[in-house]
Length: 437
Image (spheres, rainbow, N blue to C red):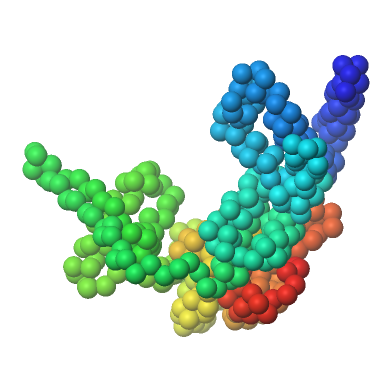
């Protein structure tokens, strides 16, 4: 490209950016600004792909080497003024999704052809390509047949358009693990002892320090026990480290006193709701906690997963009826929801079950049933979000899916997280001939 053509292209881009900026000025409505934001992301991804393509070409024709660089990542970092780590990432992606030429001039297709296609279209980001690259470079993927490996790459490229990088990582791990059912060769060597814990008293006397290394099962057991007691609460100014230290002490004291540990996601808070008969007949638009009034949205959210004791008052404020304590989401149902959702089911979240609540899809006060087909597990943030107009959640094919509001997606295409253990029931690889979504 001549410098004049480059200058024309640069001017066109600058003019295009100015047009986008003008379309999203203060006079434009929110929907227009959101649409411009989506266009910006698509263009950013396409420019990212062009950058990666140029890096590949400059590396292949020896430009970086001629100018004294033995590693293209260092050349890119100096040229663009970016961190070396980011430059190396771009070089690595270029090796996977850009056509290559052999010494005799023949063109070789990209190593990840399906991924290269969606990346060039601006449908996935650089990070998505990295996830696919890492997954297909794993030992488990290396044990697949060439046909199976290519089929997995196509699957991952297709799902990269729907999943965030973190979700795609989990999807890739589950898919490859299912197809690699034989696994690695058995290793009969005795595993080394990893668990170490050192308790050192302070020289001055009281207190001390803890230092240790734990294997995966032990660490997970400790993290689960502490996680039940370290949830931040309003007004709690302790740091995470302070909450974890206090939680460890509480677990130990509780174990000494009772011989058992608190269960994650066990007893939920009691909610005493006081509502007049008139308000009850008006579908509970106002209610009173022991500590103060509730808004309707707060009432619906708190009543999703709690123990409710209704106190019905007459016109003079005297109690007419006090209902029995009723657990709206019993422990066995919560366990079933944990198995199905594996934590917050909202796409892109994935908070652990111990930090989540169970939400009624059709609200309880509107006749919603308390069963597996009418509840979904959500973290506190997404639970509040679902109680505002916009997102719609439903159970489809036994899995929760979320329909975004039109301001996020004009087509309102349903979104869902990859379900936990989704490939557990798939047939062995030799029976799975087609790897299409």
